Image (cartoon, rainbow, N blue to C red; front, side):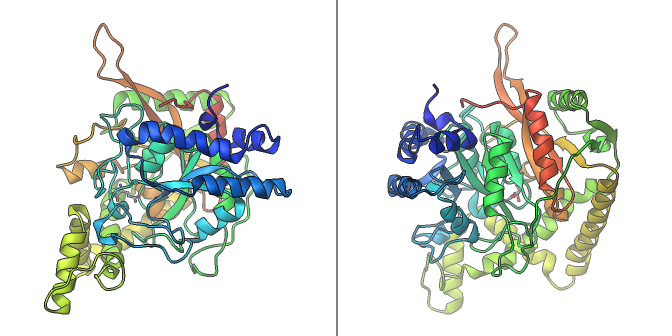
Length: 483
Ligand code: GLN
């Protein structure tokens, strides 16, 4: 049998239920692998010293007769999700020494379900990025090739799951930060419908875009975690009642006009092969048009920084974390924020402040908001004709670390296929569709790098994503990675 840490959540839950294994054994297997690989991967910023104790508590709950699919399952938690009593930093120096004073709703729900929190996973600072290179604590590495990025911003969570340092993990997704690293690391990543999961206790990035969601080895595992964390929360007024819809998706729409340029040819080949496999499973595949989708990236990079600039205003040296003193309150702010925020956070604060400023608000923020409405209407309309929209999750496999660091625009382009679902609030999932080869020599095979296929569904229809995601897994797209 493979090591316990290589199990999926579903497999481990079955073994726990049959009392073939204990949560303590499962947690130790993850911790042992972490001790071996985390020094190189930098997937975790902190491994919690009470992880084994949490597992023992889960075993005790089971011994008393409790049951449930997440009872005793060890998970990683992105470092922007509050866990009461634990340090949380959003991978930023500005939150130095800050300890969460309450549980995020997702944390509380997972505790209730009996999950074990292994540690805080690395991320781009405040979730700004696509590679983890914006972390104040150094990048994470892709387990498939440590010279490459794991994607971001939930790159630590993705690397931890792909390398079997956790059975699953939570991430957050504002413009693709769950789906893009899932694609680069060969795992499953779900961005739920906006409002399906409470945002209380997540360190906010773009409040009209953010959602927490699972990164897992299988679609069934993502469904398990989603079911545990979803639901209306009286403490988040944007959260919605969520009842699972019955869904048998049959028709997939492909916006081929968006795939004409900028997508690596072998990614397109994998995508077409996956569609052909889905056709063989009985799905109908048709072309659709999303005329405004070409604007999505530009719209996102106006609205997101506007919201970032407002959300990051709270880090002023008075209320949270780092506090550098000057001779006036103004100087306190300048010294704290100047030292605490990294370059990308500063860039986004400046961009956001600019697009919201008098004289530019109408030209940028107002226009972007109007374009967002147009896009939302187009996606709603498209999803009246088809059950799902499909496209590659990212235009390339994982780039090398450093390859895009000095060109923020090139980095932003990695988000081209993911930002739309955040702008429109639709649920979307990235499911592995196999690997492409890079750095091969004529006489020698290259590196096999994962790629993901993204499905988008109508509001509240996560079920369609799970059904189609499982169908894609069945066709052999899924690579249960050994990292
Ligand atoms: N890569 C995107 C960005 O840099 C998305 C980030 C996210 O989803 N948190 O904004």
